[in-house]
Image 1: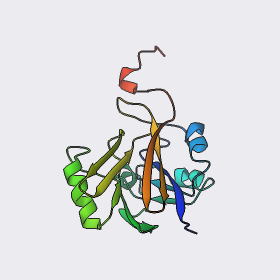
Image 2: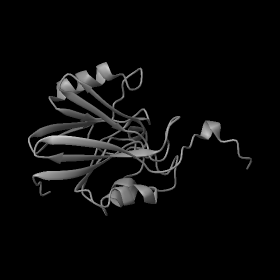
Image 3: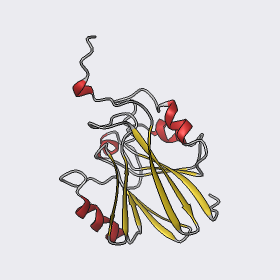
Image 4: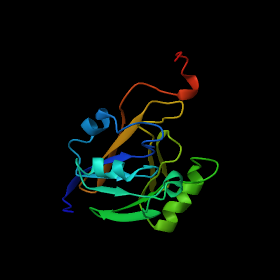
Length: 179
């Protein structure tokens, strides 16, 4: 992988394909069309997701709780230095879900500046002390929120993150349409 002075990275998590969606939404592929790298924070549930995303850009992916259930052989965590910034990726299985104090300590254990995690199916950006905690949410199975991914730009040592809504809100618990 050829790293350069500025990078555009697509962040995604909790795709749950094929158990909660048939395929990666086309809007995700459109949002990622200019990225140099894609980071998936777990719960792909099928290696097909990684292969599909690799058609767009190189992919780093970690194992989520549902990936273990589906026997996907992926690392539990990844640490990567991009333009002098230490980036960590872990699914983020902490309870209660999304507990930022626990995620902060995971980032400290990994010795990273940025921790990308998933598991909550809700996008979030939070900075605690010097550590940036990112969760891209879920493009296919959001929980009481919009389906999302993130675009992270790293330029001259600066990080800019944008939450990208890639569709209208969906929540199977609130789907009142008769079938």
